[in-house]
Length: 372
Image 1: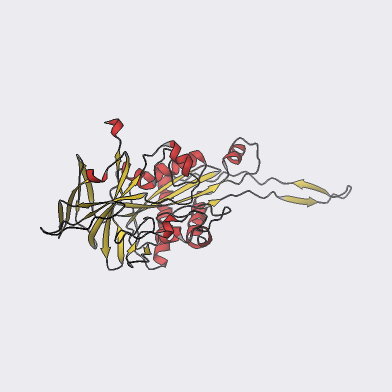
Image 2: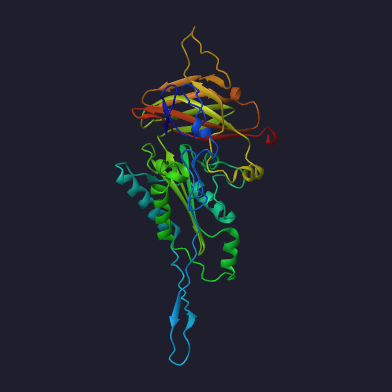
């Protein structure tokens, strides 16, 4: 979360402009070079406060000097006994990671997050493991909130990604025994180390983006993706703001409804991205962070008869058909006026409470006229 330099409103750091006044978010707009990065131990940055840790480990060789009474001293290489790390069920690893996350939150006086059943984090971890490259983009070109929606998510999601192990070339050499003495992954200790790196060694790499994501007080849930073998581990945390809002779309008519658990719905920001493709992955796979795309439209409360909103520049203003907000939220609007080309339109429902403004949905709508 950041404070707007113009109006002072607090909103998510991944948004390219302030959802209240439209002022540019220089943090989100900055290039990866403008934000500090470290190509060594920590290899990625933040978007919605997010990105990644990469650890590269090689085992030392044990060497002993042995003196023989009748000969000159010689050097003998002693191989340690080969012991493969114990295979641990993924459910146990996920629970271990959740415990570490909630311990970190408790250390800072925050409520624990619950485990989400959304499978986008696991799908992302499997993608990273396959490519042996850390990235917020899936190889099909999707950003995290797109994948989250595709797997049925209706809340808001913000991602951390971390890896440990060998590069793609070294991995194959270790796997095929071309390289000997490759250190093998111990999944529990590796998860502990990655979580520690994101919490306490994140400043230089990512301006504490991972840490801020872990410690965001508005997060309610997290889904965890873990894939590993002897030489590589991919670890994904998808934090969610789940406050009871449901999103449905029928013939371009959007309805956001449900019993909002906290705060009041202020407005709905709609951001545009190009349709995801493998080419988009290739263009963006090395970036240290992701943003919410370009502001396409803002949905606001309907005004009484005789009043109207001033038309903004650079994006569309949509006046909702219905804006019910009492014991439950019931908002309806027509998305068609915001759609002027194929692509992905993501709906961020902005909720305001006593601590500021946060997003309670990041629901992506895929518009492809060629497929209809």
